[in-house]
Amino acid sequence: MKIVVTGSRGMLGSVLAARLITAGHAVLPIDLPERDLLDFPAVAAYLHAQRPDFIYNCAAFTNVDLCETEEAKARAVNALVPGQLADLAAELDIPVLQISTDYVFSGSGIRPYLPEDLPAPLSAYGRTKAEGEALAQKAPRHFIVRTAWLYGHNGKNFVETIIALAKTKPELKIVDDQRGAPTFVDDLVESLLLFLECSEYGIYHFTNSGETTWCGFAKEFLRLTGSGVRVLPCATAEFPRPARRPAYSVLDLDKTRSMLKIKIPDWPDAVARYCKGRR
Ligand SMILES: NC(=O)c1ccc[n+]([C@@H]2O[C@H](COP(=O)([O-])OP(=O)(O)OC[C@H]3O[C@@H](n4cnc5c(N)ncnc54)[C@H](OP(=O)(O)O)[C@@H]3O)[C@@H](O)[C@H]2O)c1
Image 1 (tube, helix red, strand yellow):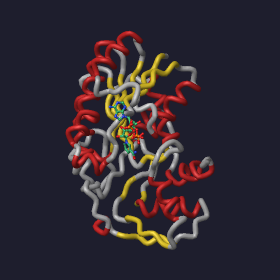
Image 2 (cartoon, rainbow, N blue to C red):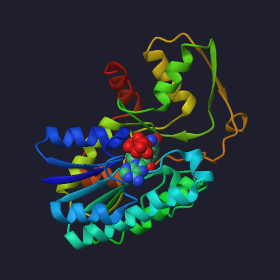
Image 3 (cartoon, rainbow, N blue to C red):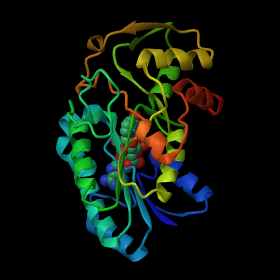
């Protein structure tokens, strides 16, 4: 198949593009600086000429705190572009898969969020991604895949930030009152490939299984990498940030398991594989 991957230089898009090529597909990569999704007429002309079979939209304005002060730009990338890609997918009569986030939810829930639960974002990032979900649904054949707490071998992420910090300090305070599920990009990518053969359109969730806090997650990968740093659990309130984060954003995975017929690796298993493969 001929497959569009937007955000093809990003943490997720780069791994997805490489994996699709390994699987024998042709990839049309779209990322800055060569191709700017905000110049959508140029992108549309290119894709009309190329006639792809499937679109993965992994491009996004992902700096959650910066979105608070640059909401107009965040909205252009995270909301309006998914709408334009949905229209294009409709014109080309192909499916489009929009990557979304647990941050569309408020985090006041007491059970894992279901795909059909209504978004109620707390931040500008969450608002723009939720609008992007709504606009992506203009495509008759759309998938929306919400994920969370991503880390992978190709990009800045929490795991590498904390491992680097641990080398410079005897102890680290890490937030212990936000619960979610860390997600290894490689595992997400394997599930994304399965949507090429799926015709049950709609909203899905993919994270690694289980749940923890940022502190619980950090303790595990610091242990695995042999760090001697002392980890001190702390409250979100001790680290005020511009954007509010959901306190509880575990995503229910049952629909994904049953529709894609997959077992989803637990987060400790995933982070152990990640640590083994670190360069
Ligand atoms: N990271 C997480 O923890 C997380 C959690 C849940 C959901 N997600 C979602 O997962 C997806 C992938 O995230 P990621 O972590 O891989 O993000 P990322 O590393 O920031 O990658 C996004 C890519 O999109 C590109 N991009 C931004 N604006 C563009 C434009 N106007 N035209 C073309 N390309 C543009 C970025 O380029 P520049 O770097 O040059 O701007 C970057 O290469 C996003 O939809 C994100 O919302 C991420």
